[in-house]
Image (cartoon, rainbow, N blue to C red; front, side, top):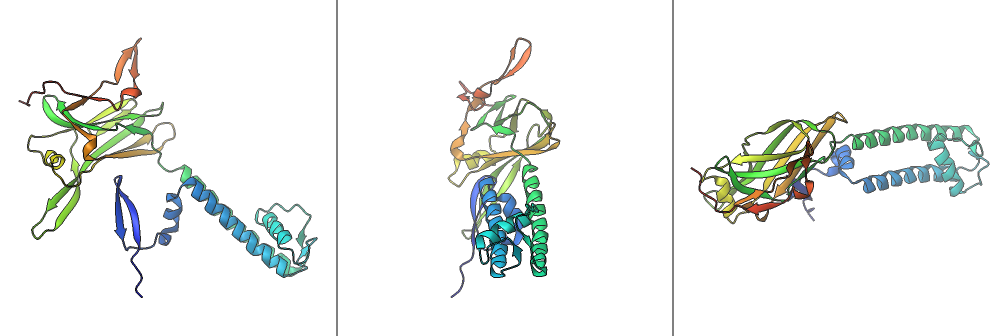
Length: 291
């Protein structure tokens, strides 16, 4: 009986997709471990720790006399002696009593060194991953910018230190129907008025100017699946580490003929950013066509 091809759920710019076939995720153990959540990682580490100690503890129990002061045949004593050995604690209550016991303990100590080094490296790598430090508006708007029709998305920094050399990219899922009923889809990059921000400290409105016959407007008005993605990356000036974030918008999250409410104002000589208004947009009254 033929095996069914593996199904994998992947994220395409925040858009869920199903991948049929392909290599097993266990082919890249490092990426698989880095991708899992913290509770799953802690659970996996605990299971490996228990498995190693149970294996060696059982081995000590099956070889009576190899561990001094251990009850013969006791898996419990063997397990706790294994924990002491793996962690290089050595309380002294139990110790290898034969050359065979010393040999097994030596192998376990070597195993413990690899286990500790691997877990330490993985924990450091997980903490060193780029972190989300940005919050995006829940909606995108199609309104006016400098008298022209424009698609706009707003983003703000959540941290007290600015994000240096922030770069932004905006794309949408472009669908083309080919002869013969075939369909071609691709993420098409949308040019922005400003895609680099030297110092992102407060908020940033990403603006893409559109013509009246823009294919993006056609995609918004059509019936094919619509997806707008926005990604921003930069350098955290406190941690000196990369920081990045992204979001996606479906068709019903793009408001036509709307504009964002102002979030920046002056307050007693200081610039005031009202994060509570970041997601607010209002209809444009008496919108005139662009000249």
